[in-house]
Amino acid sequence: MACNFTFADSVLQCPEAAKFDSTWLNINGVVQVVRGGQLYRHDLVAPEHVRNTYIHVAGNDFKKGGPTVKGALPPNFERDVLRKLRGIHNRTHGTMTFILWGDWDAWSNGFTDADSITSGERYNSFCRELLNIANAVCEKVVWLHAPRLAGLARTSDHWHFQHQAKPHIQLLLAELGVELDLPAPDQLPLLLEPVPPPP
Image (cartoon, rainbow, N blue to C red; front, side):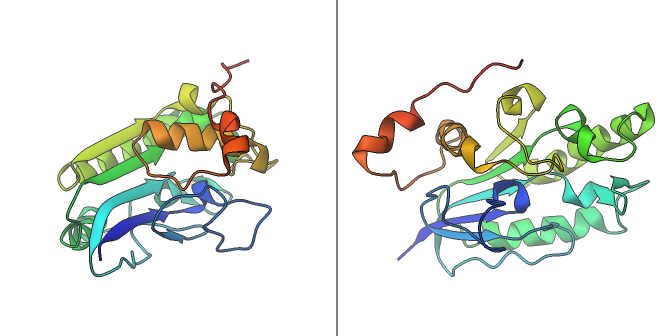
């Protein structure tokens, strides 16, 4: 029987949970969360038959030690990412959705070269290149810019969302069409709280 499949790097990891926690957001189906996951380097391990697929990434492919922004994407980046996305798409009977979380304005505080204009331009150009690759395979491609993420509480390293951001992340996922196994009815109002505006 086909089920939903979600692959995510640490953008959807709960920092207070176990390293490979995949349950805290109540996402329906098989969920693979890879801390530090990169599309270029990590395999996407999907079930044999998938109803809908959701790929969530936050630009780990664009950073190197420091962390700083890479000078260029890895060799054969487009070829290898296309191969992996097509492999999952071949198992997907419904819709495949690719979601890129954040741009330079969203994540720059986590980089040591946060004040570099050229690093920001390079990071955003990598984002556009990845989205173009995804657009060649996926039925739906979404780029969540900084204003959409501004109200989500971050950890001190600026790379992850705190547990208190859970209801707002769930609301955002629901808006994107991600199926959730909702909590008990007495907790449902938490999901209906609007995402707070940027300060």
